[in-house]
Length: 159
Length: 217
Image 1 (cartoon, rainbow over the protein chains, first blue to last red):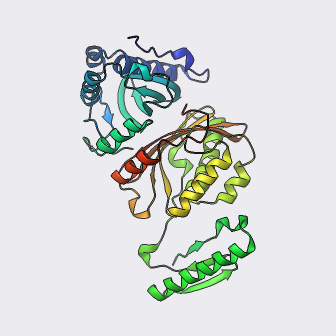
Image 2: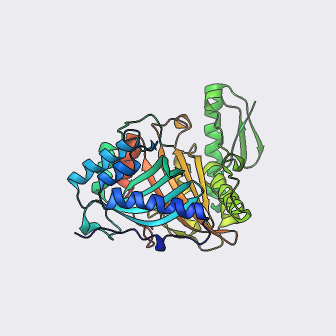
Image 3: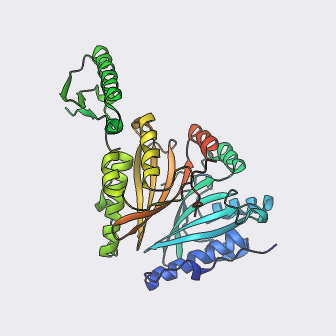
């Protein structure tokens, strides 16, 4: 199974400041390591002490929340992958829109998987905060949302 | 006391007979309101009905305030782009002033990546005006705004009922991106996450509709 590689060159904009480019690279490395490489040891070592205030309600707060959620998901779906389609940077805030799929055979199929926006706030090379909006595309993923979308594991609200 | 103004916004498109039927039904509904609440009711002009509702019936229009979101490092162009998108979202999602949106934003290409809507500005106007007819209290409570050159991103708590506003367990969690070019909004992407159970069911049922060929990205 090939691992999806996020290419900065396809996403970067000339208008970004040095700091914004740095923040973009920082976030893409994190996303590549956790969502595509599933290198949870690396993520734990390099991001495990960050504040990481989590606004995705289904995850517990802090870096260990997202780490354990994605680790569990990848046990069931080892081909879980983030195909980052758009990237926007506004100072400390890095936003990506991605086509997320559970199976390698669904990659590039516009009628499968999840349509996800994520925003991370990055300050001094620390992930401070994360927000997202997760939309199921196919019926199976929309059913998962009906079943699991009400789980609330932190007090930070969606916003 | 503040008054609610109910405007028959779609009446401009309707032939006279339907228009008068609409007005009759409004008058009938209004009479019932008077009967039910004994609040004062009066017509000020042919198409406007004003009534003073009981306090709990009062519908506030949410205002998106530029100042609340502006960041010092935004360029003049970015500030202008954000102001354009705020003007658009305020009139479309909160004021439901579809005539304004049509006049100000309607006459140029608008590539729609929300699959449930027809392509073009007319697609989104049609979709939201139908939705607002069913849910007149439909609103966008914008929580975060980001801008990156031509791209303006809103993260919003959208609700269909007044009583759901600010309730983190109701409504929709929506992130939108609009691309602004030469003062016009030319492209739109979004991700819509239903928060409560009934909105999630709604997403299950209606989420598979595809009305344009632009893909989600």
